[in-house]
Image 1 (cartoon, one colour):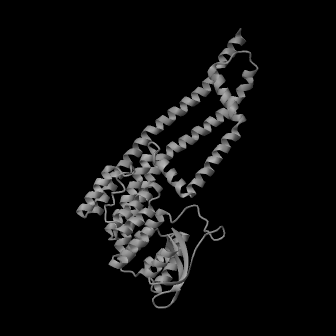
Image 2 (image 1 turned 120 degrees about the vertical axis):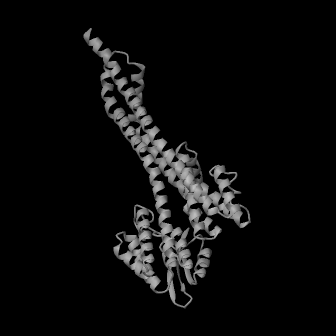
Image 3 (image 1 turned 135 degrees about the vertical axis):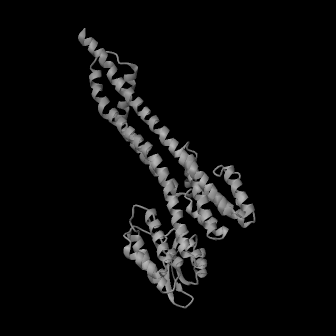
Length: 403
């Protein structure tokens, strides 16, 4: 998706300007015309070091977004107008990007623009999902219900991600500690004994010779390891910028044992939850699938969803392209097919979400239970071997001294 800056006139003939998110310039013009705006000038907006808003995170904090949506819903349900609600939320918000966006939105809504159109100009704050469901809520007259649905969606999405992150945090932390301990032993502790054993005429055990050789090799060629790591990181980022490179990286990550399985199931949850929420809100199927494709952050899944969109456009089932692809298990395909045939696709997708949420929860619990003792045992074993290799020759030295 690219950002386009435009100037034009609305249906009343008034001059207007702003930003719009679209795949191409032609689609941006079409989108503006759908909103009743005739663009007179439109150019792609490219950020640089001087115009980019420096931030350590992309988009709004999920907790801030959920809080905003719930508060917005409560204000609308209480009978407060959209403009007044936006003003109240602006006054109490402490999150700077949201505060700035709400200030602009309030003025635009006061001038007669719809809330969804005003939100669409702030894609760095409001995800595409929010804009589309807000538009549905405006058309149906149930904007407060749309906000509640959105809050539930983003809250569940955030909770699922936190579960996965918390399950992986301890093993990763333990792995980092293990690497630090090994480096301290190999670079600082073992070399202290190297000179002592070098002056000894006593033959060293094979284990000690091996550990001393590894320690000396890492001391002599540490720059090789650092260069290799640096090159791998650069290659990774260069691949990520390339469309084909990103696809193969995403494919490879999905094939990683355990981690790939968790990611695959998490992506299925994101796919089914997003599509179910959009269907429940009466968003057309093609539009729902397009939004879902843009939300899912994996090139392999994006490709399959794109092929599914084409299948639906041709009058076929969305499962046709999924049948030959391993990321979508048979269970998912069967449930989607049943949903399509019975007209209850949103309910079937919700059941898929519930099933795989339970699956991910069980996997992450088992992962925490198994990985912790395995990593601790591995670290103990490696440290034990290094310590033993240093201590073993000492027995020989003491025997020689006693003799």
